[in-house]
Length: 422
Image (cartoon, rainbow, N blue to C red):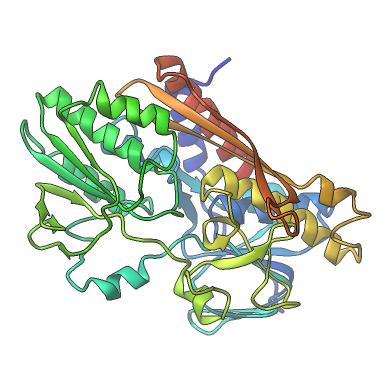
């Protein structure tokens, strides 16, 4: 039976109501594994390392906040279908249910075997997992007139989401909404094309207006059939989709991008791994952290015992999504448990054959209808016939958007939330 939106909110609300528990004390601050970042990747890794080690490995999870606000479903906050509070996922359950030491603090520097927090506290570990998400730090230097307080990105769920929501509430019939889409790879969800549909639906119900989409990519990156159809049928005359249109100039004060002005402007700037990883020498010239997809160990610092999972890692072909982050975390957790049990992380060769990841997402297209996309990946020989990598082995897209998919979206999200955070 599908979990309806009402039941989803009831379950999410009950979880969010739990009191935050302080960290489990460890006088020496010594752990087998320290995980930095409490999103889908980090929470899943911490949970499964504990579970799969038979609760013998000591695991600490570090995050600047006591809870994670999900980007998954966050576009529904923009049109009022959900409240941001319903997407807050407390990290406390990882402590109560799995004995993870949840430490609220900001990681300021990292090196093999050690994390230093703001204030000077150091955490020592045998294995370090970085699940730090994305950053826009390079964009802020490149475009000094970019001010996310005036032209929000709303790409890290939280205050930016409510800021964009409040700006969208000022739209009236005939107004223009401008949004940018960065060159892939980028975090999704929240999906940029689904966001265009959500706002187009809002303007359509107001009587009309314009959604101008400035896409840095040569074409729609995901769910092309769905969004091509939506832009050219139900949102024809509202959505103005412009391919190959990267940000050339931006002025947040006048709400103008590339000379195009809007009443509300959503600047989704190009993504990179956070400066924390860059400062540790873990990123490449493109700003991402390359990894070995069999273990998610960094390939920049061989033998360092550092693993990078989720949005900040460079794992070709695999998307940067919450579902994929959960999947990568399990591959990484399995490898770490093997390492710390003095076992070959690749097993007897069978594990290599069975390394798979998967990703799924649902995209709201109208106020009450959604579409979906699913993809499966497996480790194997690349097309060059010489190297090995993760390869796409299955891709599926909904034939149409409808209300049943909209309800199924909450079942999918609820299962993902539960698997990662409880």
